[in-house]
Amino acid sequence: MDLLVELFEVSTQEAKDETLQWIGAYVRLAWLRDIYCNKCVTRQWTLIARAYLLLLVGFTLFVNKSATHINVIFLNTFCDLSQSGSYSWGAAALAYMYDNLNDVSKHTTKHLARYINMLQVIIIFFTSSY
Image 1: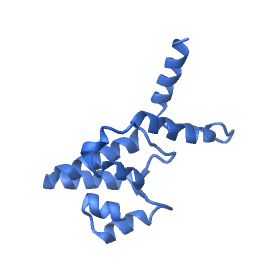
Image 2: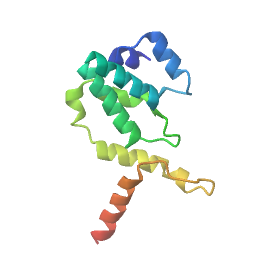
Image 3: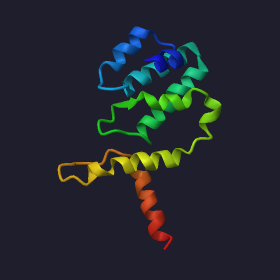
Image 4: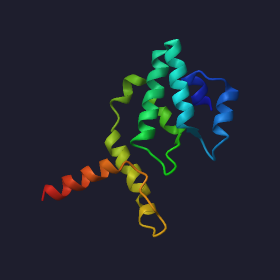
């Protein structure tokens, strides 16, 4: 909640209401989109960039099965926007995908919720290089 209050300048009550909807420190992507739109109206560019980047990683790199929320821990990487470009996003996404591959191997799994295009690129790259 402290990250949300500090980095998005929302009230403590609003941050509490949003995070209590999930087990753990998650926010809905729809709520995040609303924050983005509200900050666009007020032209708070740094807050807009943080919201956009968190939406981007929530929709592409760190997608969960519900595809409706994202862990707030990823917001930590956007505290200092000048440092965000120096992170190894590809390695982080691969580690996240690898961590979740166990779900795919279960016979009850109906679909893969991760960023499947990146997995396809990795497969093509490794099969064509040999």
